Length: 272
Length: 269
Image (cartoon, rainbow over all chains, first blue to last red; front, side):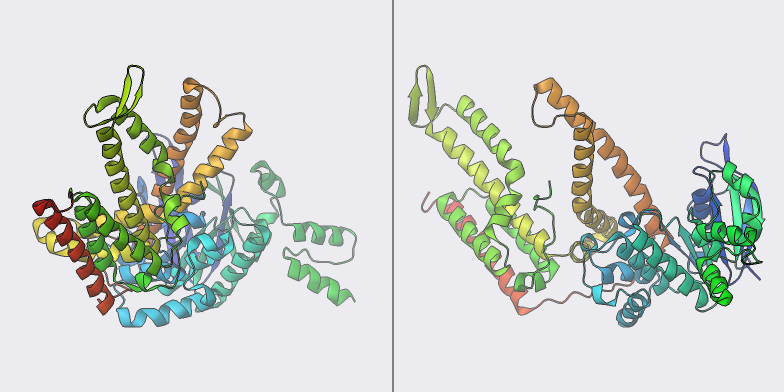
């Protein structure tokens, strides 16, 4: 079963120029999919359409087999959570606990159950010691982890990350990427990540490449990275690990190209 | 900019911090009414002492409250100048050629300044000791009865809460824009009126643009997390009045009573 199915989707901000042009794709349940593309390719617009923040011009979106429309919007939002780019602009509560509670309040979770859920969600992202901290006292990475905890509290089956690491420092970025990977391995959760980070793309199961609102490529990370020239035209690069791996293959040190750093290390370890 | 105290929550462990936000809002309202009653020096002394006591038990530093008044300093000077030029009643105090400063001008300015100072300190105590979401909940609960006549209690409360939550963020943003503009040659300190207007414009325009952008992103985040102002919601925090809340409210009712009594009987005026 597909977690998300997008059929012939088009969208325009001004009613004239389409920024999303007849896009179709499907994301299998439990998969970790990434959407990549240059700035202005329509990645974030797709995320907003998937969560029902904007209405498509034409085409349909199905979430867990149910069509997304005005009638099903609030019901489907129980199944989809989204973490946005700027951690400052999604922190609603005055403390970490208040912020995690915000989604629970909206979903009418009984007050007696909230404290346990808040503590458990904070623990999943390693923020259990910061429940009474204010947003201004947290780093960008910590704020994003709180945003993830807020989403986890309502236990959605699908989580969308809309360039959630783009405003973070390398340490924050690594911590959130680790978190995303951990979330994917838990509970058969579907992850859709919109990103520029090719190291993250290498870790995903499936990749969608957008260019000017059109799906240009789809496939596994390795299949996508084969189109190096096309990616370069879109101002995208292949992961550093793949570059090393290619060189190792060219030098006949290894015989198989891999795209994550862990895989390269494994290959080199086996040589020993 | 980072020194602005008004609207900032100070996480301290005091009895005022633990008070019910509804009680704190009601105390603020009662004292605001008392401030506007012409109760002479005695009335203001009573209010002043109550505020000082509140400030002490809230563990907030007096310097912190004074910092909250910094933004109105120039307004006070402006008021003094206008009053000295306009008010020509009372005893002549200072005579300088054709120009005379009358006692009423000074008294009037002092009254306005003291009132403003009291209001700012009271608001600072409320916002520094109450988390924005608690404040929202307090306002919402107090406005609940008015929902029957169409007052959107929850929407008003949420708007206030978000405004308060974003004060520190916008202060940081202002500082960032000021630094960015200063690095491009904008001088916020020196220059004539025309230069000052242009420099402030170079700050206000990007600040407005980024604020609207932030507002849109926040609205998206709230909506994506299932927020609908017209839908029923449960609450994480449950408010409970304690003995201290009752004592505080009784105290402020007494202050209001004293001010009304002085105003009617004119004792000590």
